[in-house]
Image (cartoon, rainbow, N blue to C red; front, side, top):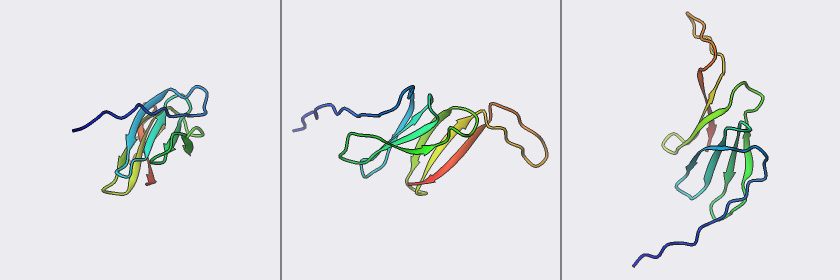
Length: 103
């Protein structure tokens, strides 16, 4: 027989956080991307307080998504508004620039 768990409360000490996306790892860690601060927060398994893990606020644009890709051992982070310049042409604004962070 299965019983529901009590809801957990996660504390994130940040103003203007506006969580945009959430992902988790097999070991139970929770990772939250912040649209409001362009930061990524991590809550280790069994804990309820988040710590800032990645600060992408120095690059242009808000975070639009996080994904824990355990097969590759990386955290993929999508950020908008970064100007990318492919070899043969220029691409302005609205581009998605993936950041890769080892898990």
